Amino acid sequence: MRTLRTRRATAAALAAALLGTLPACATTDAPAGKATPPAAGSAADDGARPGAPIALDGAVNVRDLGGYRTDKGRHIRPGQAFRADSLGKATKADVKKLSALNLGTVVDFRTPLEVKRDGADRLPAGLKVTSRAVNDLGLYAKTMEAIGSKDPVKQEDMLGGGKAEQLMRDIYRSFATDPDSRRQFAATLRDLAKDRRTPLVFHCTSGKDRTGWVSYLLLRAVGVPARTAEKDYLLSNDFRAKADRETREGLEKSGYMKNPDLLVPLQDVRADYLDAALDQVRRDYGGLDGYLTEGLGLDRSNLAGLRARLVR
Figure 1 (tube, rainbow, N blue to C red):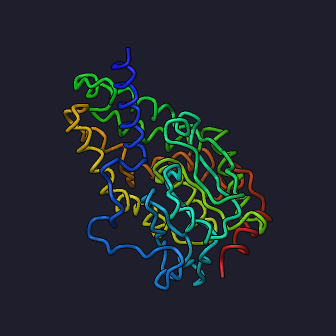
Figure 2: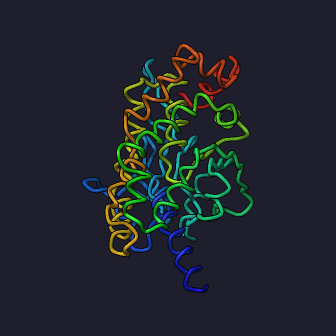
């Protein structure tokens, strides 16, 4: 019985690593081919460059959304809106860096299962999490089931043959079709429009899908061109590359997966995933403007508040 519990716990830990937690062997080196990002608050990190990274030991995909240029030639204010992956493994040094950001709000899009497996956010004293769980269509549970089986045939059946890619596209389409998800996204954008709720950081587990979608919405809502907003979305592949690769290597070495590349579609962000969400938005609301106003229920004052708070 103890051996069975140990195996289940190991499988759950490995699945959590896949979905955003740093694997035990991971370091906090910068993504391959990238310079090491400056620490938050350092002289080099003035927030002026678009998407300036915040270097943490317990998370790999933390960025300031400030610095991006709008189609009117203005810029997003640094130090107001941050995107991140899970903060459940933040170290004491990380908490100190987060404290320096003077955060007013932390929004967590993770489901209860993700929080249970990965751990609650570790934050500066006095700062509480606003939980806004967004449905992942069972992605987390399905991934744990596949990995925990240690069965190459079952894993191929669950994730191979384009199934993983289709699941990701379905999740992105649900950002438009699921009313609960829309409510969570809308509440977060409203918070960003309010002075008393910022600076604000929002995150999920890997900081790439639910977080990536809200980042895209935010940038587009304040006038950042679509191509620029998409580039920010795709940057998660760079920031997560090393940790994700080490996760796959660890699963293969431990005997949990014979073909860990089955996980790549779940670990990646891809333009066609974003396109799936945008296609559903066009189908249901005629375009992004309709999604923001009708789908999310944002009114003129909300959108004006976003621009006033975040654009200079």
